[in-house]
Image (cartoon, rainbow, N blue to C red):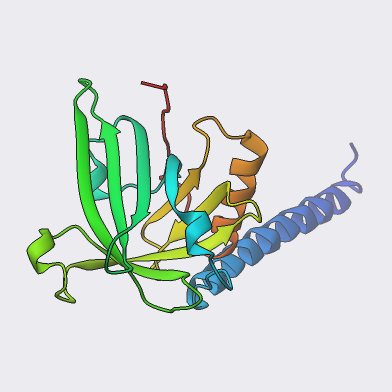
Length: 195
């Protein structure tokens, strides 16, 4: 390379570096923009189709799930009050079954896409404190895969009707979560061993 070609090469490298920096900056700005936008839920959830057993596929870390090592499920049933019974189960690393039973309260009937969940003792669940947001952000037409989150984007779950869902579908839901502002750097892929 001659000295006369050096400025051209430097100029091209500079253009490539600038272009890369702009793309990275645009990606970060898009992520920041998505985080600033209010989180949207699906338009409507048919509650009777949503009930039943769901297998956890992925989640963001959550303090009360620290003991969950594998085989995480959530079972939803209607109770006599018209609320949803929540039965969460998982196995710890030493094989112990952990169970947490709660109740979900629909916040936006008849759309049913925003719920508040309480795991307080049943005698005091009627009190409005101690409830966490459970928003349905994306669900397929056949009610086989769902993305659940909360407006602060701190917590998120991908649930499936099968313990071994299609990896392309899982990626689609993870990509969607990222597009609405979730940081996926700490996502846990749930082990489902069929125990």
